[in-house]
Length: 474
Image 1 (cartoon, helix red, strand yellow):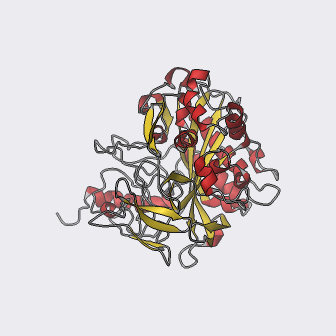
Image 2: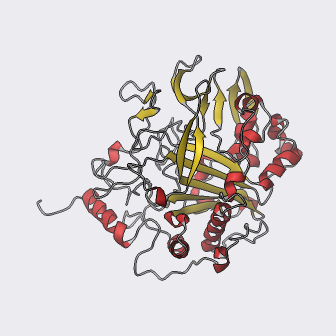
Image 3: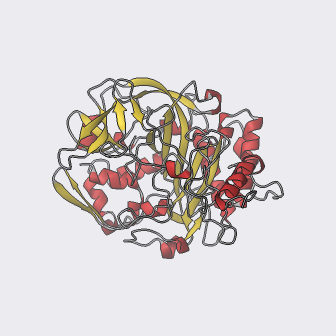
């Protein structure tokens, strides 16, 4: 029937209109703001860190959790004495845990506070696979529009570091496996773990004025064949010199514990121009996610079916290739957020709707930051997720935590950190990972490390992949 829109095209048009009426970080025009920032956050000294004893019992209004997220973001991005955001002086895991991986990888002239792209596992004397390029669960490499890999860094605050040292985990990572047995049921309250994503600034595509940027050495990449599995992987090439680059911050997970939430409150921030969000799961595969404008990681008009693809170097049909000379990868990754606002679609309308508290708080904070001409006005809170009643629901040996025990955005995925693990329904061999608690769980896990099978028992502290990864890096 001519003149009628398909449901996919109709939803795509709504998505386009939403760019003007309801951007990712603002609310519909008719909404009355209810969740507002604390004016004290915007004093010259910036906000204090969140009080680790802040009361957040079950059924606490969700606005309180979103305010915890934004307060923490503003605190850790506030300039320290050296002029850089505070979080850049936090500790990288590789500087904390004394294991063979750290000994092999940390150079004697490493600067404290410099970014470090933490390796996933040792493969050979000359190369390493990297957490800094491979995304969790999917082992996917996010390739930007210029063909460059997106890197990640991990940062731990002093509370987390002192917890690790007090337990002796820094000197003997095997002790992590006996935490629950020794009465360590949670990471110390006030602990903060950050995971940041960085793209190499492209002056032809990126407006540097809208990003927080930093000059850093970026390790070279190479392709290596795993001698055991014979699978090709993207790895760090430690034999080649690093390349000095301008890095732009594009994503940030802000993860913290407080007295009432030892399971961590998981919050996610993104740059406002990262990628479009899917207006609803009914959008057809052959429909453009956004037919009207480009984003940092998405070209206008790209079909949904051509996005969030995870090619591997050994993919016979569409391999991920690396030009070692230019350090460019192909193909480029076209990205969208599968759940635009981090929540399930409205079952009546099939539209992904924003949380009014997140929306109003984003508007209030970003308006204040814009008035101060702060670069942080270009970042927004996508959402947060937490266990409502951890005293009764933060279980040991949980392979994943289901929606009925969670609050906040239960489809929360950062487009630059979990690009390839966003689907709500997964294949039997690839479990669905639509929020942080699908990955960060407490179940036992076993892994072969350097020819030895290691088993991490079921423990509550297993929700921290910093600790879990340290345990398996011997």
